[in-house]
Image (cartoon, rainbow, N blue to C red; front, side, top):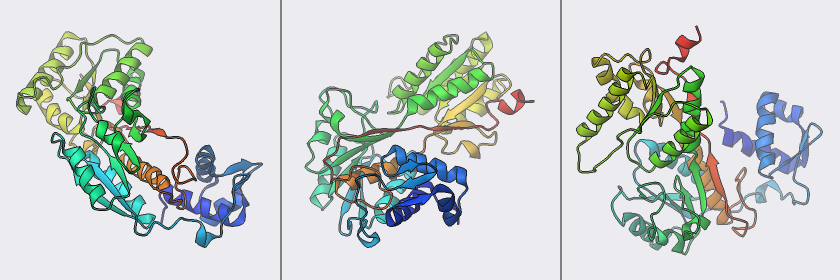
Length: 375
């Protein structure tokens, strides 16, 4: 059975811990991995200070004791990790899965609190989880722009337990800015989409985003890439606008925005957040005579259902599972759990705080026209 990257890292660390040093070629053969894959894994582990590379070998870090395998992991049995998320559906299903599998692999238990984006529900759920025995918290507050507004979110930094923010961040100066954090680098993802479309020859690239905690970072990455690549500026999308307006109105305004851009010749490509929105919009565009990808190349953001569309959608894909897993490993390390492959401090939480950004990947399908451009 093919091992997940975290499982491979666990096995590498286990063997190096037991033996002190191993040649990379021998280790690859023993694990049934290609040398290229193993070197990539070793480089990732070395970057975290978990192993050292030396003349074709991988060795246990200098100065670090090597406990017997049976004592290698701090016991996590009885530990409870609380996780507060807006929902366990769509985007967050994989985030929760990554956290749950990581926590359970360490012998601990994950409990969930749902905010459903209700005002003040985040703090209430966090208090409930701590009162019922949570030893630490993974928090995804319902901050409208992915970060707290002035005076908002102070409760997150006032917990009496270790806290890791998940897919959220706090501006410098805010008390929550000093918390551990793991998030997808959505700005990078948007910039990658712009760069790909520019590489296909597009200069007028629109950004059509719904208002969400993800939107500000998408706009920031989009603007930075357009400027860096010297592309033609395109007026901003109508966005979500008045929250009292209906979904039908939002789709209608976005549809008009894209149709007018194509008709005027100022827009030949668009990045749409999310792929669920794109699945609704593309048939409407086609009904108005706008062909995808011939007249309008489309890249979507999220990659939850993009591959299931009748016209498979090129999509930026945040690694949601990796975000949840990394956040759980970081929190477990703060709780003193040093499981096999667990990234993070070795001293039960006294090390410096960490802000970890995980880069999304671009999955090429039909809607951006890349297959046509390569012919």
